[in-house]
Length: 240
Image (cartoon, rainbow, N blue to C red; front, side):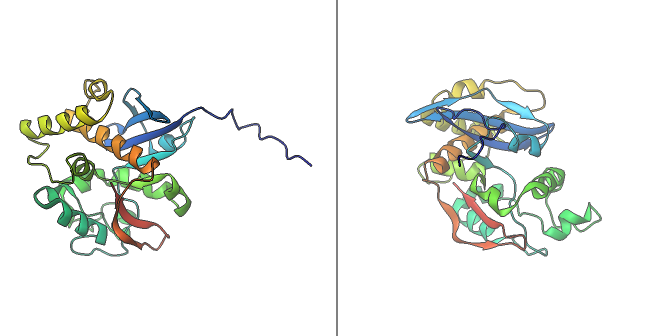
């Protein structure tokens, strides 16, 4: 007997969609691209209000390169997770771009003072991190990978840490040059104007899109190569 066709399934697409996703002031900044063979076609940048809406997009993403923690330690640990510490060591002078992921106790506390060990950026992003934690499950790690823009730029730069911080004019130009050299259509992405989204975010999410493409092609590199697992069964790792 032939099983019935699901009424929710649409026609198979002639392409796959990958995306770089980064939290921003009003939601989640998303850079998507269609992939078909050697064709790589970036789409317009957009902001999606909630993380659940990102993962529920139709047609869906084959790969999401996410700049937010996936997997947390049970308790606060100096230096954070093993992947946080190893990524800092790899990046050398740019290692400060790796912010320690909070512990589960901090996520669940709702800001009762247990987050005192976090830097200002991580504290500000806790609501976004909670969105991700609420939706993540081990099976979603077939599609959603934790990444970091500075690791993406490290690869774009021939696995050499960048010279300048993205908070400087020199750093913005350094990153723009790498992206326009390596990503077709990058100029269109980087010329986008979105309310409350700074240029550094545009550069970051374009770099994440580069990593999403690498992951789709099974060329991504894991840090560490043998990751830790958290109490929810999630791998704690970066991919670049």
